[in-house]
Image (tube, rainbow, N blue to C red):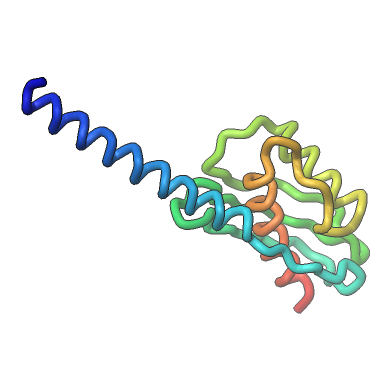
Length: 131
């Protein structure tokens, strides 16, 4: 086997192992994102922006605006997101939060890590609404 091919294979294997390790670490970090149990009974009316930096590689960075009306979450709007999810995705998650008046909702099946990233930005907005 030619020497250049051995070197190429070694570099490729090394790159793949490093990538897998990095991806595994990022997924572990995203799974462990904690969402506080915000008291939805103590929110001040207004519009509040929340931002989540998206984890170690910023893959899930997003920003939302949460509207509080008469002490309740009445609307959640996605302002920006690095992930290109269809609007139905965020609408489903946001509607669950509005209907339950809680961040303790079921995440979207097959998109747990992304759902947690959106929940974190909403939590960050609601922390401002508590003050």
